[in-house]
Length: 286
Image (cartoon, rainbow, N blue to C red; front, side):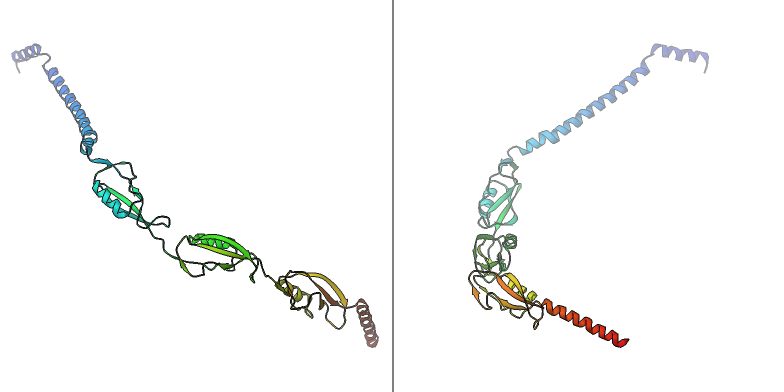
């Protein structure tokens, strides 16, 4: 490049010194404008999608949900359809305190604002299935209560009376065992006070241990035990009882017994005789 041309280029740069800087500034301003425009566009889209459009679409399309609990399924269904909701049958709930096929619950709850056409789930009451009544005879009242509650039954009343069953157990029930009944059925129970009379067992010639068991099994008890020397009987054999066997008592009372034993003199003589025999055997061996 010759000198003359270089001078010409230098003169041109001197005449237009800010041309290059102006182009960069315009580009930067354009970029800022695009960024700001994009930001506000996003904000506008979000407002339209989440604020304006929902309000616009819900306008005149929501309604307060009616309370249909207590109505029959058919009545509730017709009302909800008239209100432009979609009734759906929900759970079947066994209930004994409400007529069958009544609405016992609804979801969504009554009084809430619900979009038209939404499904409304209705839980309906159904009859309880029959249960087999348990046999409570011979059980305590506490055990009977547990069985009764498990089957959703009710003990209506309790009374007491004499019976041949042990004390404090059930000997009669107003509902027969194994009968099929509805849950909530009430039953009357009678609890035993024991025997109304007591038959005295014959324990003469029994051992004292066997006599004790027989008297206890009869619901009675042993009173005073005295001993009498008898060498013709085994020790602790009953010789006499104060109340004869097979006697019926209207009021229980203790049974006194007389029991045999060996006399002390016979025991001593037996020991002496044994000692003398032993000495004789020793002498013979010598």
